[in-house]
Length: 522
Image 1 (cartoon, rainbow, N blue to C red):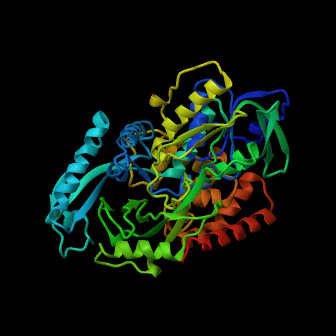
Image 2 (cartoon, rainbow, N blue to C red):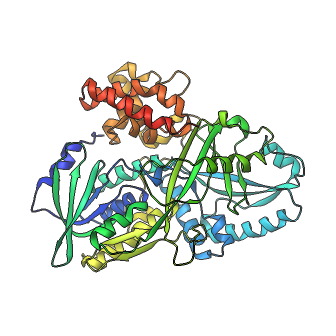
Image 3 (cartoon, helix red, strand yellow):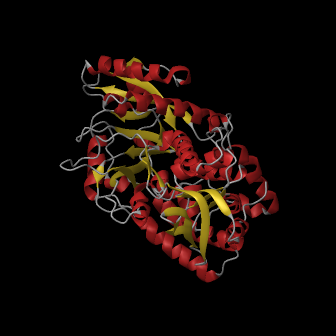
């Protein structure tokens, strides 16, 4: 497998006469999915991301590939059916990262068992042939044995249902790799700073290589704005008087030790103080708890959990566990922003807004895709490319991603081996140890990650900074921020050799990452 050479990818941009079919701005789930869809149809495709792939919302999800039980309760059956179909495709096309997870809703009111069983039976039926398994009512005894650590007082039983679980940032990296294999050019650390126009129509973008400061004028038949919570910035460059389309809503997640809820099942709390659902999901050997829904006024690449959000999650989870987690038990805490539709006059909330995606085409031809969720990224991409074909009058070609395996796809992975997330790349990664036996050593004596993973991330997964590796290639920042800080000097030293960087780069990387990681601790 040839390594991915950033410089080679950038060389293509130096040709002033090249006209791309499609330029995509934004390297989260939607942008990467759109680049893969467009390239696999044979269009000349370029994706530019200002930071790292999945740096924002796309690495900060609840790690669920799901139809959305909550949307079913809101009566949005079309959205649930679409998401359940896409969930089935993801399990097939990215089998190394997506798994069938069982969720248990504990019942503390006798009639709730029947109530949830009826709703979840409809959920199963909507999945059709792509069902992950039938939901069923279970006894109090079985609920306790499957959720050791659940509060027993007043418990009547539980309802089990099935949904998908995955690793979001790992899937994003694999989508970038698949896009490259299909002929797309995808670049991280490349910021789009302006739109090029002729006679009022968009003809391309102006972009800066963040690493070198070099500015490129890039021509394109159509430009797609897939920047998530940042969509308004590009839309306002296009139409300065445009009203904001998006109001960010923040969701936080707390990570604690699995001992608080051992067992393989996830816990689903159907109603919290604010009427949302709360999940406690086993993830990479830890317990991930979330999420919240807090409308906020500004958006950033590195949002921070608010004290009241942390209190909300701790308070609500504590009602269900015999061993109550305290603030000192939190290993990592991260916040993400959802791009929800800005409320209309007189309305304040965001949680009632559907997660259905919207595609908007401006007078100058800028295509903006917003809304949606990770599970439906492929469908969003398909609809966006279809719209691009229509807008730019491209030669029409059919979407082929329904049955297109994603890089690394492998169904028989051993989930007890932490390298399972590499799927079909696992053996090649271990093959690096032949080149240097030292790379078999652990990055932290208490964790499984090895040095070869850092080298692999730089050579084959486009990692450019220590944060890229510790946050999104191996997920340790999101699992144990203190351990991630301890690993920083070793990771920086390995990367400096691979990237041919000097000691100043190494020291500044360590300093920057430690500062960032402190924000993931209470």
